[in-house]
Length: 124
Figure 1: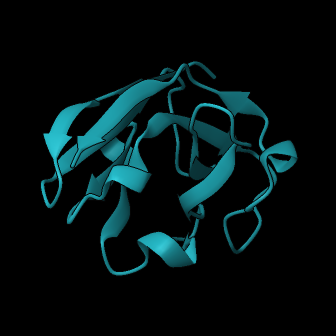
Figure 2: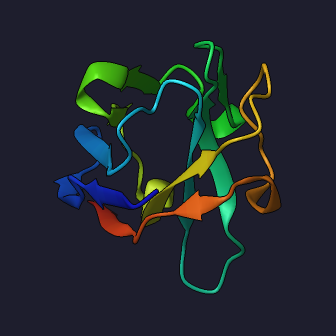
């Protein structure tokens, strides 16, 4: 599975961006998908995920501001990011997990495929 993330950019505090993650596989329906981010000098961290049965999970700091969704017909997963803050600045990457867990994993090691990152910069 090849993943292609896009949609990053520069936005002011309080603004919005929508990231997309397009998959090359013929079907995405049996994969859980996750979004991770890594800021300079910091560890990669889980942001949000959606399982193969549609369950979602968010890190506390983005709960209520970010929304993860999937369109299996389009082989695409989205991350809608609203009310962005400077601390959301990072490189965002998407990942796919083929293990059919009911809930999307929060640990990077549980994901099998990764896309390249897309830069999100939030100015203050």
